[in-house]
Amino acid sequence: AQTVTQSQPEMSVQEAETVTLSCTYDTSESDYYLFWYKQPPSRQMILVIRQEAYKQQNATENRFSVNFQKAAKSFSLKISDSQLGDAAMYFCAYRSGGSNYKLTFGKGTLLTVNP
Amino acid sequence: GAVVSQHPSWVICKSGTSVKIECRSLDFQATTMFWYRQFPKQSLMLMATSNEGSKATYEQGVEKDKFLINHASLTLSTLTVTSAHPEDSSFYICSAKGPVKAFFGQGTRLTVV
Image (cartoon, rainbow over all chains, first blue to last red; front, side):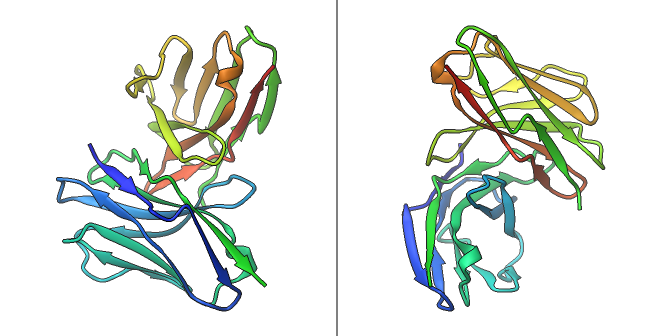
């Protein structure tokens, strides 16, 4: 079974600064996808960024980028120019390739952004 | 973008009663939907996979007789918590498999008193 580990229960960052959230995973599969989801106080899950395992290039979405290290099974999220609205719980998630969209989540990292 | 609507957003029920939560895909057909449970300050745990027109697949440790899932149409899945008890109080989130990715509902906070 796949596991996702987020070793940072809480992180804080100053507004406009950069923060990196860590995620490691364990799998024996070669075809899979990795995600970062944001869950603000409203509890709505919001997809931040997605990475296909077969792609070597790290995914980026505006101020959000990942450092995908496939051999090390590491998938960290970098948030640049942090904004107050970035404050939320962030979950790293794994899904197998194919048509099964079942997600396995890490325990989450609570990000606080200080003004 | 694709929208998944979950209803109700919160519900309070008495111990021993049943509660139904609906998950609708508003602008796409979802042959597969997922039901997750989230305890306070914890992660989302998959409870079951709901397949249109067939029986749901439950994760290990989830009581299928307690958490009844029905996926009778391509746009609607329901989760019924039967004979609810205070320990069933939690946040329940559905997710629908769309054309390219999965979309999440807004979640339902269930409180059993």
